[in-house]
Length: 130
Image 1 (cartoon, rainbow, N blue to C red):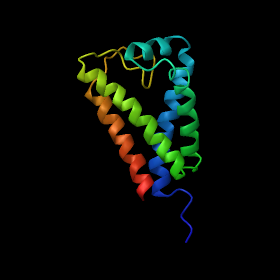
Image 2 (spheres, rainbow, N blue to C red):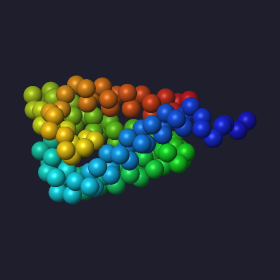
Image 3 (cartoon, helix red, strand yellow):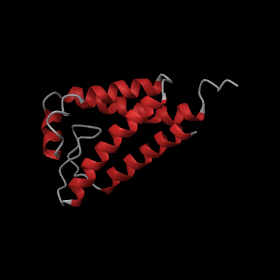
Image 4 (cartoon, rainbow, N blue to C red):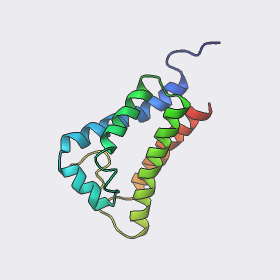
């Protein structure tokens, strides 16, 4: 039986996709500001230039309904790595600004960032196992 075009799986994946695209666009708009914040956060230097593009590609695939197992797993891996980075900073007592969704944020990272990411991960995992 064919699934409806906008199934629950699609809605769950697309919500994360919208957030990924928003984050990727904001990072690209930041030019040199976002890489500096990402470096301060402790992101690996090799990953910093690619993160906005990864977010844009994954977000686009999720919204386009191309949330194949590979796309969902890649999205889970990316979001998990972002979450581990934030968690490691929090546990080390380091609370730099989170440039996660907007380079303009001067608010230090906090547990709310972890909760937000865990909710997005839950949506992706639910879309994967449904």
